[in-house]
Amino acid sequence: MNKLQSYFEYFDKYYNVESWDWYKNIKNWTDIVKEIKLSIKSEPNIEEKSEEEINELISKKSNGKLKTINDFFDSFLFSQDNGLGNIGRGVIWDSKNNPHKTKIKEKITKDFFIQILQNNDISEVEKEINDILVGKNYEAAKIRLLRALFPDKIAAVDAPNKLWRLLNSVKSKLGVSTEGSNIERHQQLMRLVESDDIVKKQIFFWELFYMLENNLNLKKAIVYYGAPGTGKTYKAKKIAKQFIDQHRIKIEITTQNNYRIKTIQFHPSYSYEDFIEGIRPSSDKSLKLFNGTFKEFCRNVGKKEIQLYKNDDFISNENFKKKDYKFSLIKVSELNEEQKEIIGIKDKKLPEGITLEEIIEPAFFIIDEINRADLSRVFGELMYSLEYRGYAGKIKTQYSYLNQNENDESVFFWENNEDWFFIPQNVYIIGTMNNIDRSVDSFDFALRRRFMWEEVQPDFNIVKNTLTANWKNDLASAFEKLNKKIEEEELLGKDYRIGHSYALVIAPIENRFDSVTEVKSFLWKDFIKPLLEEYLRGLGDENKVNEKLEQFCKEFGYHECKRIF
Image (spheres, rainbow, N blue to C red):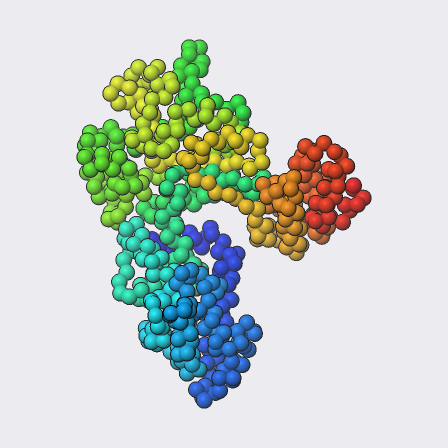
């Protein structure tokens, strides 16, 4: 099985693409174009039909979504975002001195429309479209139109620069090459993946670039933040597993499960001694230096990297020194046989562009409620190592002087008769935090700069896709209305919105409820009302609190609000 197929099957299994609005839009418009094409091809003497008759056919086959030939091209050629894809600056437009769009429209006739819909040769259709395009190179608009006409031959990567970044990544990371024109390369990509779902194939090639070139590699540390109940910790664990799975596909490792992922939760009494190292009583009643959770995790998952740094040829390599020993810049092909053996790939054939970073399996350290601890105290001198990974970021920890020789239990990396610590380059840190937590300010700017930040929003499409009861859409809508009211409330705001996990608590017991009214009653009394009461507690006026709660209750659509308040 080729690697592209392996990536596609993973994408198919875990990305739930059928629930995406983009998938639904492409499928809808692809089906419409297919119906119009079939009619144009099967209609006898179609060339003799008037433009009005052709327009009537278009309207009928599109269920009124398109009325005319002009509508067809406005949607599939001229629109910036038409449901198939957004071509951004590749859109065809008129300016005062260059009326490109107007000139192109003048060339679009009934005969041209019939001609490109009847022709089954994509190369010939491309030439016909090229003949009407005037002005600058509108390659993205042309490719998107061809994708509407030939959905099984064109990937959802319309802009040429986006196509080429994908092609370069596929070649260097997976060893898959293409050749010819852009259209020919699109066709080669689509043929490399087997699936009856052509829409899923199209979208896969857009997502493939991000699967191969994940933004997590930029800082290797990210914080997911947002309102309570938005699934931040769930997302962290899911992202970690996906990242490791995709790494394994890239270098053809068949291992399943056995993920190197550790999750801890910070709290106000969490300390440097818990996280990095500290002196504690040992089993023989003497005081010893013990590694904290993070340092011990790094020692376990960084063994290959530590061994490389102990290899004289590796550490003295002038080329590697110039690159600060960054694994993302060192290609596997630059290693000698001994170094390849250290990382376990001595006899493995890999694409030329594969780097050390892509060979050593990633490991994830997830810190739940990261902002609840005194971060300056917990991280200590780790600030430097967070920014400079690996050998370039090695530091002396507070108690490292207590290790007298290489065999001491808590030694991390012994060099020049001293114990050093660094964060291995295969370690990724994910933190989660609630915006409304009172200790949110514990993240100072120096620490913030060392993390990427991504807000996790309430997403009630997850509720629609997870629950099975016929009232699931009504429940999702009720939460969305409630959140809108909370966001508009000056005492609260968007950080106090209620996450979708508050609706998902009923997933194991949804068959107990016969109606959305029963569900709302259950959720309001046991989950939502107590949470909102806590939010509003600072008002200090019980009447005002009840007034606000009644407003929220009505917005949620719970029918007994008056009786409660």
